[in-house]
Length: 401
Image (tube, rainbow, N blue to C red):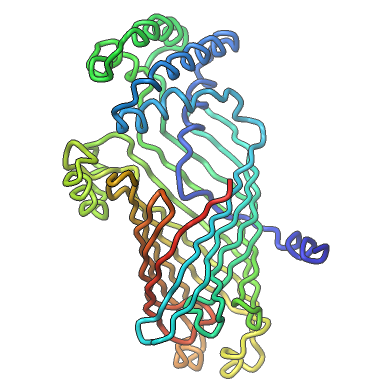
């Protein structure tokens, strides 16, 4: 274990945050940049907490509760966004999978583990942040000969990012404090959720905290260790990554309409009465990451057949991720997930190109339930794979918190 820790420590790098935009930091920034005295901020937070407790008892409307109060009230409770924070998670998918062109099936699991420590510096028109992270993603088959996605990516990273937009104050700081303290008792007096939503006080309150489009830019330097399941093939990769994400929190915006990937799921949400109108969402706009790596092959028998010296090379990389809500039905929340990865060796020799070792592409999609069950389909190949595979998988997910 000691040597394993030392090895991980040597893989120092930078990458980009994040599959999801943290609206909590947007709200924190809006409050801290308001110029209010700390005593007034604490008073406002206390009142908001009391209001949240009242609204919590009226959450018969899940859309209202999840999309509004959980963002505007509950997540405002942390008033210190400059201290370090930990983002830890371990997701494990237990599954059985089978290749389209094979009669053999295998049990196995895929895992996604990450630890991230960061610091946020709120600014008037955005937030700057830094973070360090360790992550490991892989697929393991109990019978390694049947593993269709035999690729493990482990890295340490140091990240630089900037967020713009999100929650903005629409009034002057002192006015925000005065108006909010007057509005909260009136809002708390409502006993019906529809009555509350239609009240003029509610409209005024939500207008104080405007949800603007959110943009997240990230620049990173990456260092990692890539291998197959039994480490018989492995290589090191060091490079940089740029990532971009945009979220539109309001329905009907041009960014929401631009999200054509969400059109089919807007229909499923409407048909299942998850949404009360047919509308795509800007919250699920794809996340795009692109970068260049310097790859050092150490043990790759397939590549060695065409490159005896296993010379280092530069590699271009592109990743696109997408996740959206499909429906809330049968006491479950169903999501659709999709990801595309592309790797291309820069300046590859004709020998490597003819052997189809210069580029790799991989697409995967899945339907997942908040209860843990999922089904997925994948096609393509990743580094160390010899040929494209079409793979069907079914299983359940367990998340450690």
